[in-house]
Image (cartoon, rainbow, N blue to C red; front, top):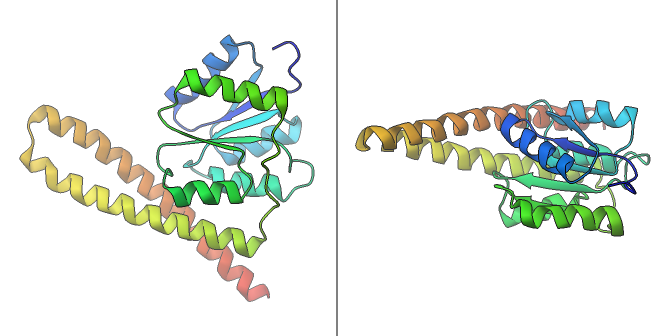
Length: 209
């Protein structure tokens, strides 16, 4: 887009999805920069402010929730539009929390590119005034902790169910379940790590009060 000011920052830890989004947006004429997690995204943003951020939620090191919170408490980045993509955090409570921390749009995976591209163009051309006031640290971490705890329980239930299924399935069915199980275990570990970090931050915050 010749009239586009700035670039699109795509933040995604799954290479296939990252490559698909990058290739699609570049084909449409956008300048695209990529990052694999929130930490990398913040490093990119420090160098040059993007016109729009498109980010996954569940990522290692720093997830989408934490990334957006950090953007919204910083006056220099507070108004950057953010589009969330997620296959994990899709419950109404997840979407409500996302909007409460200042996410402009929420799109479930797998991404429907036909519907996705007009949303991106509309935000870039018309702007978007949906950004909410930044939550306080206490409000953010309380809501964040609840989302992580709920998702951790769901992942544990999914893993238990799929482990029980394995013995009763055919070979082809087992291979499919094993792939799903492997992904669920990886996601549970990422969520548990993030939850431990948040609990530690909350405890440190209480001690300093």
